[in-house]
Length: 249
Image (cartoon, rainbow, N blue to C red; front, top):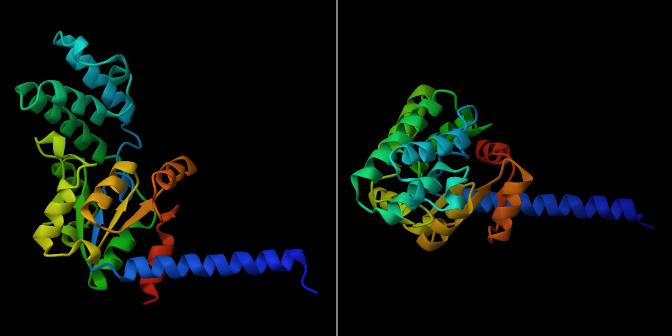
């Protein structure tokens, strides 16, 4: 007679095998891999805090007499992109937006010097390149920041020239699929032959709109819950299983 504990162990083993097979199918079908930057590749604001950057952008606007340009919730935001988008909505195409975007880029460049690599990201990137997949960055961060970080890690050859980041057309930031579509067009890839690795619901929405399969990366349960609730079909808490599967090809 089979005990409940044995049945539970068998069920868990079968479930783990099923999840591994799903993950293998997902990554082996990808001829092009589109990476979000801040999250899957590194924690850009690990030490140079995003909250402080957002607050400094708000203070800079206030110092120019533009305190009322933001709502209360926007002024209290912990995300500098929220501040940037809000100003762009009210002053689209203005010198103010261009100056604010440059200030954010400079803060991101400072942050890149203390960014923490996501565990297993570097060897996964190199391994994926070695097995013949082509990689691109599709991010809301400045491409200048991405290039600076990749150069410091010796990863530039794995991506160059396919780095698609923030432009002055801020309305085209993710969740708009613009940067994904640029990457696909430049690399001559059909959406179904690509894979997007992202850690936010805006990454998921952009991938869905572009028709690209999505793999969620969540370094904590809160992020994982948000992705799953938004409809992500596959979310991993570590990149290690991807690396193991690629090396086992």
